[in-house]
Image 1 (tube, rainbow, N blue to C red):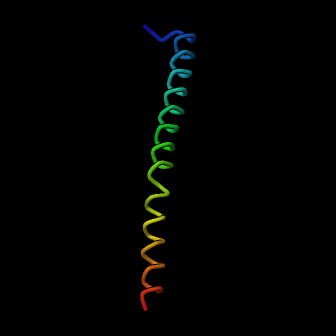
Image 2 (image 1 turned 90 degrees about the vertical axis):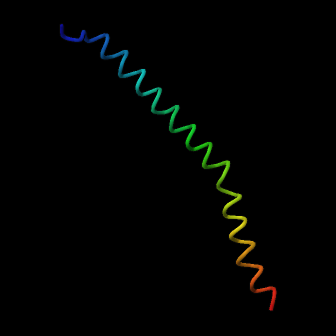
Amino acid sequence: MPLESPLLDVLYVALTVALFTLTGIVAKALETTGPHARGAAQRAAMGEGERG
């Protein structure tokens, strides 16, 4: 039994929404963890120059 065109349309829309949702979740997680890692590395780099 071949898939009907409306079913493929619904599947395409559902997969597209799921992909954008997953991308948003990953972006939000990276945004949350990103500044802490950069800030710690920047403090470590600045700390060595100021110690001397």
